[in-house]
Length: 331
Image 1 (tube, rainbow, N blue to C red):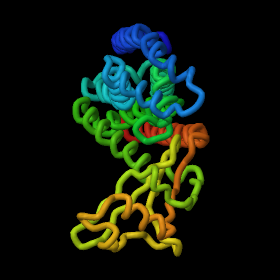
Image 2: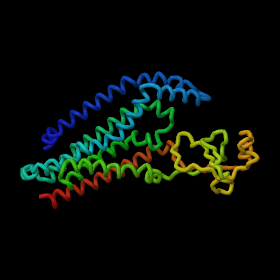
Image 3: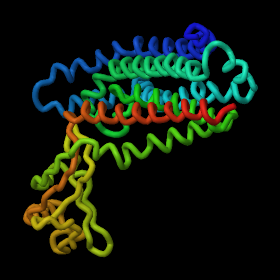
């Protein structure tokens, strides 16, 4: 049964292997160039901000910058594509063509048939997600180190072991959609919609609460500001820079009493014709603080293991639904 499953899957496997091989070759060819550009950063010991900034600018202006953004797109679309092209047709194609009656009336029971399909193709999905993540993480390690942003939502989902959880979940979600809908094309569309609906809330609302975040209220550093503005009604928007090498969940400027600072601005110090230095001096005298809730880079692997576990658990739950459905509801 395992060999038969693999023979049925050989076309998808060959296409996927060719795509991964081509992508891997591109990464291998461009990797040494990034390492060469990173040499100045690696040699720097003090006052390295300008060196790091220069390295990141050179990467953005080169082909490596385009490939970096393309690699993020590949990592985020890969699990959905696995669900759409591997998972959705797996059972839906049999049901749509009416061949399930023949397949499930042989010596192999429908439960064993489904178990073998899920195990073989699920392992292949996990392997594909793991290999791609390993390749991209290794290729982008210098960029991630310089940008210090691997824990931020944009990069996080394309690094570590989370892509493995996404890939397995996407595959089983596709199988479930195909089994319930019984038609391949609608099942593919439902898989994409279901995958987005399940994954998108994670960085928006859930991930920040998987591990207790840190909460600090340091004095506002006016030498490291992200934005200072005065509205027409005199209210102010003052925002300090996010803490480096963190995922900042909350960042706001507060008064010494803990209330959100919105001004109003002193027109004699921060008027249209007054010097900037006078407004800065006025702000310094207010004793403002920067309230930040954040996850440091040290939380990266804790978040990775928990989130991966969540999506693997969802995959197991969906697989249980598939086994129940194939035994009780499909005839």
